[in-house]
Length: 359
Ligand code: NAD
Ligand code: TYD
Image 1 (tube, rainbow, N blue to C red):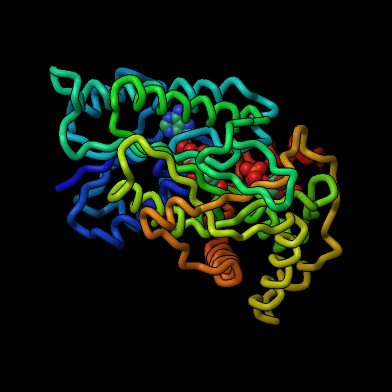
Image 2 (tube, rainbow, N blue to C red):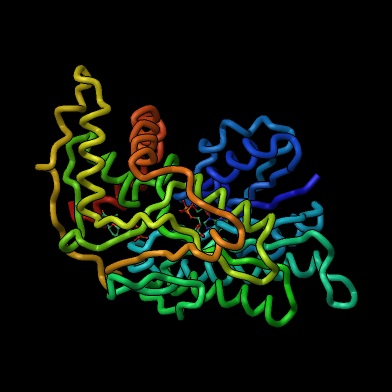
């Protein structure tokens, strides 16, 4: 039975990935979820799998070399799926250090531990091992020409401390491939949306604020473009790269779904108005009047857009979920999980929100 070590499995994409893999492979795989449970990690996300015999959780920090080496010593890990990271650009602008510590040094710890566990005496690696490093399109910087896209060959040009730390981690993985022929792949995906996303990110923040009649903060002129992908389609891409990705290669993942932020905000308002029953008291709160243009993010990248040609042609990946369907599914999920939202927005989130949005 293949054993996956998933780092950051209590976060947004990690928890969706754990569900995706159990839906697909059932009892044929084992997953060990390693997560430090920062503000962004929530074990409640995994209540649907916590009783499975082939799932376990270990609370550990990826910066903790001893703890990570112990996990490799005690388990025969076949595949590492490395999600754990500090993931929010705005937080990286305020406090870059922890992004370097977790995203760069933590990745170094993970790479070193996997290499030590998987390396044969002659420097080759045991059969069937793979390290999948989950990264972002933000490493490529910002696109100005509307006809331009991010390809795997696009030079790295990160601007935020977040994207710089992810770019550094990617280069470290590449160095392990180039130096040791370490069995790794890198995936660079566009913006994800879907269930379990922490409401510091645009889509869940707007849904949450609209439902409670709070202002909807839109940075700058609202015309920055992101390329949105439903989270399950990202999970599908990661699984395909694990199964079929050529050793050492990197793959861009994105579904050609570019939208201006203001369009996203208006689509959420419209979807909420459509879905909410007339007798739901929250319906009266939802209105475009809540849209508030606020000070722009420092160094705000104008446009991201992925060219997924390589993963589509070489591995046969295509997204399954159209944006119109995915955003409906997402809005519905948040409406049905108001307890989840209350849980993650109580406590430190309130301080974060006040500091960030100056309210
Ligand atoms: P998230 O912030 O929702 O989750 C991150 C998880 O990592 C949390 O569970 C947190 O507890 C854990 N973590 C943080 N620091 C840790 C540490 N030092 N040790 C162990 N665990 C730690 O992030 P996400 O949105 O799910 O993103 C997951 C990965 O995917 C990240 O590497 C991110 O860069 C990448 N990515 C995200 C997106 C996106 O749109 N969200 C797009 C492309 C790539
Ligand atoms: P975000 O979800 O933080 O993802 P990223 O910065 O990694 O792309 O932001 C998505 C876009 O939405 C980005 O252009 C910034 C913008 N944004 C707002 O306009 N208002 C907000 O409150 C947030 C959180 C983001």
